[in-house]
Length: 146
Image 1: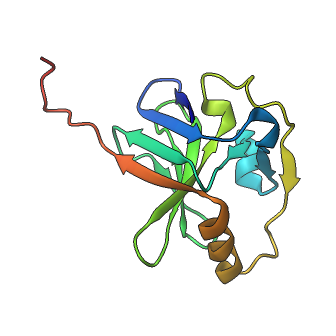
Image 2: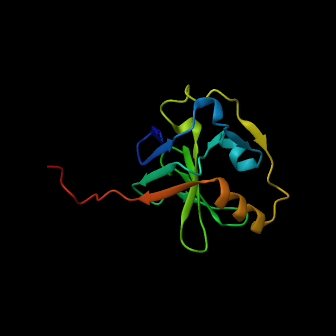
């Protein structure tokens, strides 16, 4: 397993994407919606991997079906990931490759994807099958370092 850390420009959002896939087997996806295009997002996922997002504030934006949380820093505007919670409460997500510190590992150019005609039920099925199991944490800002 390889872990790739990253985050927003100011440090309010951190992300760690962990995958067991080889570089040639990782295909970033560039969603064609207006939001993702404007952020230049290229998403990575691994159903057998792990995605951790650490958010020191409330840096979530929703649109469309309002089932996806886009983790975008309110301070510096960087989009680091998107997450979706299924009906059982499990969280799945995708990391924005361009928010990771090391992007040269991923050799494949992002595939252009258009989900405009996808129904909500199809979208949820696809995410459950392909997105990365994820955790969302908030740092304990009151805890003193030892």
